[in-house]
Length: 347
Ligand code: SF4
Image (cartoon, rainbow, N blue to C red; front, side, top):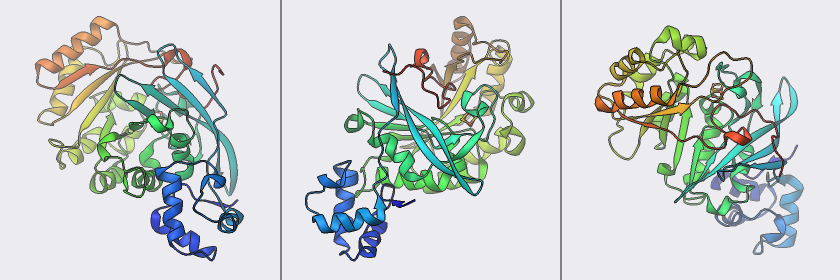
């Protein structure tokens, strides 16, 4: 397979140009065409000579590919399906990943996938059910930004799609570099949120190296109950995750939020609200309550609206900012925990 240009840094693009016998400034031109102008074919790179383009194309792929299909929700949310080929077990495995474009009054947010499937096995998550099918490379992740109809309108990104982004941190860090560098998309890190279940060593690196927002999937304040739903709790206790987070400043530009999916009779009562208040006390943060979207062969249902409202009010009354997040894209299986790399309603 040829190396892909998409995902290379400016320095790497210059090296790639030199490897084809071209001047380093061609690398800067490539960065401009790819990342600033977001062209999708060699032909559009008008200020690079035909001979230079041919030399580059003989050695490199752009790394850009069209989605296999889309599904449009009644609320405007749009799900895209992309084919990916990931290194697995000494060979390659073809798989599919999904991205979700969520339009809002003043923003277009892309919920982006970082792995094909996931190793983490959270019981309530369709992606976790399908197991792990390989790491996406930087081109696979950036292609999700490039190859959707709304590419030019995107304002924000959340690493909340398929996979645990901190289990593919080096690649995700590279993508964040492309998104935020002046030679790349030149986005502010404030436009990017990374969501994790708390992979501790990589979380420390993320907090040290990045300025993006952080979202942590918490879901239960009691370690033994959290473990029932999230095997990660055995390796990295949520209390250790919080101890680490408390060492960083979230009172300014960077924000931390906690995702709390609400299951009836499991984590939706006063006892849980009070334990969550104790766990988060003193931390500048926000809690997002998420409706659980039922999945097959899983015993739990979503908490009732009154239970969710009481939970929210209890947290707010104890100075922990808490909101019930509106659910988007449920009719096309694009809501939280529903992504499975399958095409639901082609349009
Ligand atoms: Fe993986 Fe996230 Fe699903 Fe857990 S919730 S299985 S980390 S994709």
